[in-house]
Length: 458
Image (spheres, rainbow, N blue to C red):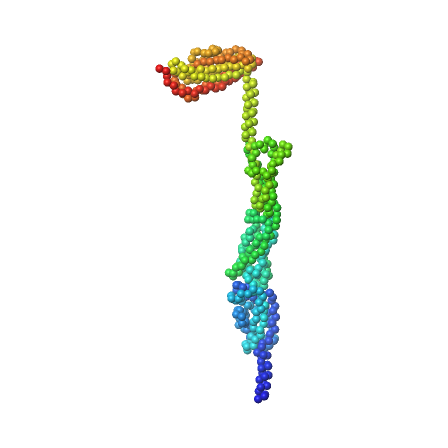
């Protein structure tokens, strides 16, 4: 009886050694990750050395994670085998950070050995990093990148970059810890109104139908750029347009100065009132100040209208010319007409020509013409005509010499048996005379009369 109890005691003492498999496990890989919501596994590269008897061994866990290799792996006595152990995520497992995973290696006889592996559980967005170089208003292109921060292979990765400066779509593969860069051509009009500072660069990644937003930063460095454009057009009405555009990315104080003289300033207008007006001698300076935002402009339009002063100049010149011409005229003719009541009810007018001599003149001859619609009445006032040409409807007076200040009055009557209505015009009378051996000519004004219909006297 004592021998039986002793045998049972030793059997129980040796039992753990008979049921335990013996392995030496070395993890070759490092920084393994499991990305939640992504079907890809965490992959561990192991070197497994069998310190016991050769057998077919199975790898498994009691935590509900799918594993590979599936089935059994044959490892001989003393053999070292490279095993790639893959652990697939669980949909119901919500954990972030480092996680220690326990698994077992079991032989066909039921002997087993437990091992532990540590991996990092992350979201898809935490696997990437994006960013770019600096950008300025003068930059024509920018270099951006997407980096894989973890030990995980992403194939067929779709990326959509989005920022206030550009948009870009790419489809790439990205190996563990790999970084890929892209050159993006920039269009100045897309960001000409943005101010300097830091802007978000978003890379929307799509891997096997799962999406995540990865945020980076673009630094828009300060640049003070003001471009001045000036245009002039017009001669009589001159227009000057001055544009000062902020092509930089900071709010800039812009100054515009326009210079005018004391004459042109009287005929100059502006599209906006200047901030200051200063006079220095005969020059006047107009100044505008404004804080201009990026992409905006300060526009000053200056119009100088020379039409009015030119009209004044032309008027003055005309007066001077007429005055000089008048001063050179030695004989002045003035012609007027007045209505005369005729006994027979005919339409009759009295035409009067007054000749004034402003200097001594000789051989003065005055000629007047009669309109074709009327006839000459053979009765004259003042000087009697020297010649009358009925056919040519012309009357001439030879007045001889005239002294300075002398006046002669010539008059005659015209009539028409046909009623005349409306505006009745008589042509100019002409004087030809001699002064200091030279022949001169002078003309009178035209005479007008407005006639209304009248009943003939019974």
